[in-house]
Length: 109
Image (cartoon, rainbow, N blue to C red; front, top):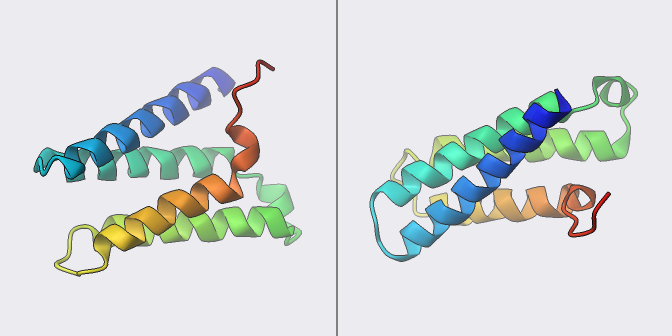
């Protein structure tokens, strides 16, 4: 399961980065790539969530759940005509990086 989660997280990260680059170049399929990357990231975060700590209302796990809900809201908002959809997407990605900063490491474990 751990191997599957690392592949899922890597794929989600690549799709988010490539989708953002395509959006910067005004390509129409960049939004689809970015949204699919965020959806895979949501799936990864749900599978990696520690439900025991969440039941005990541990602060870090509660922040992770809030981050997941913001990502879901950003995915829903991307399909509307809202002016704030890209700002919400950026907020969701940055918040995810801040909350889960321990998972992003360049050091070999």
